[in-house]
Length: 156
Image 1 (tube, rainbow, N blue to C red):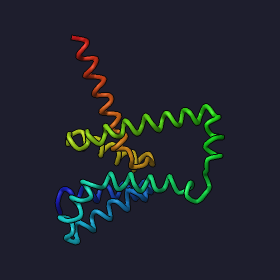
Image 2 (cartoon, rainbow, N blue to C red):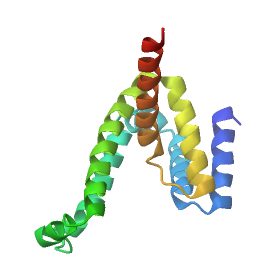
Image 3 (spheres, rainbow, N blue to C red):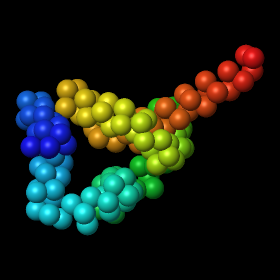
Image 4 (tube, rainbow, N blue to C red):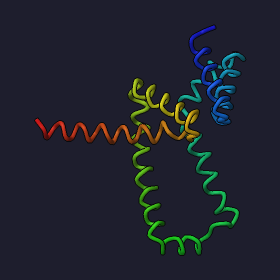
């Protein structure tokens, strides 16, 4: 048994223990792909395009209430009368900008990616988090790194 397989089986056990369906499905899917001999075709594609596909699926899910008519212009008008809606609007903008920088960091810095992925796995398995963590985490890490660079440069 290879080290990656053992690692994945440990993640499967964590997912089962934590009753985290997303982690269980992801691990089982990846193991089936690996063991079926399709890994050389599917895994590079998933690694390269997976985040964009995932973001697209999440975007579709978020837009469903609009297309079904559950949310419309009237709801938007009413929401914008609330200070919390303005906070949500600003937060959405801020997170999207941070996540865009996170994509760059994930693509260009493999050792940071490993730490972010492991952190996300822990959050999903132990704290019932959602696996958007690597992208947002990378964005936050990117922002923190830029702040450290900035303050280091003015400090001497």
